[in-house]
Image (cartoon, rainbow, N blue to C red; front, side, top):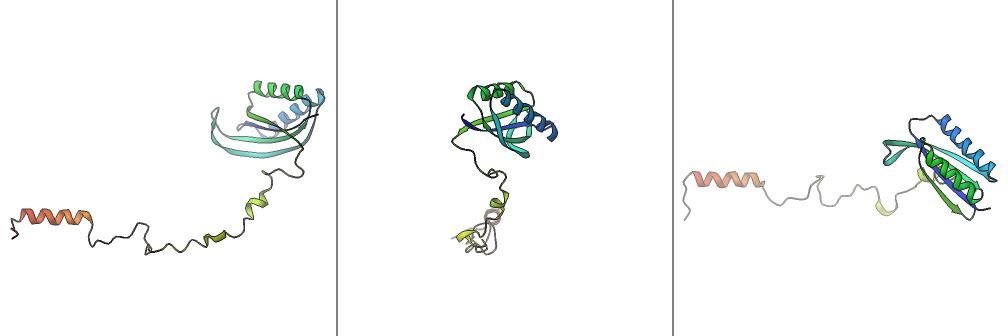
Length: 159
């Protein structure tokens, strides 16, 4: 039978227990159609990049599936009808990943080590502690306008 990885996103306002109930519903549906579900992972309630059906967050869940195409198609049809599922994606794979998925391997993300050749980012060149660029003028443009208008109003003549 073909192997699949399936991820679905459930609405933010349902509980984790309801998400587990949805997972169990889809598991029994696949098993009735001759398939089986291997590893399942609940990734938690995460923020979405953009709103989906007025939701800013969603419950993410992964399922490793070993089932015929017809069973997966029926599960996807049921998910499309469900009001609790806002998105899902099924990908056919050659083999299931052993161990935890990339989303569950937090230690890899947290142990990034040194920052490479960037150093501590303390050296900012010739900025002299300022955020802006270097100014070679002694006065700001506003002062130069004020000085020139004073010269014009005082009636001084230049020869």
